Amino acid sequence: RGEIPADQKRLWIETPDSRLCPKICRPMHGQIRGLDEDFTTGQGKEVSAPAAHPGCRCATGLASEEDIAAYEASLEVGV
Image (tube, rainbow, N blue to C red; front, side, top):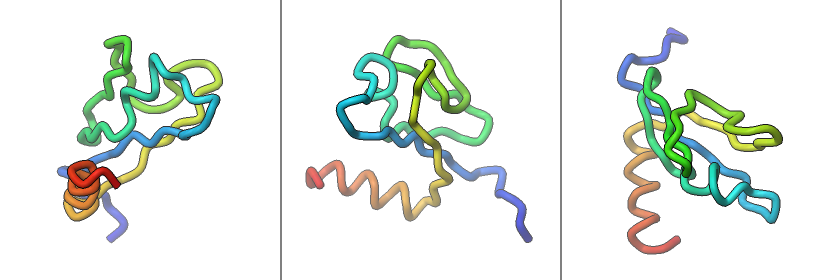
């Protein structure tokens, strides 16, 4: 117990306000990666976790298959 499964996914979460970096962080919002996979910034660079740049306020969270399915469904209906 307390171990993270090897197939666990991570989700990039932006801070959606006027200070959000439109070139680096906004394109990363919602990216889903494995535990050992990097996220891709809006400029094409690979980062393993926040902070993607100085002053970055983004976060990552663990996402289950159910979380991912719900997130993807929300994108389809524009929630």
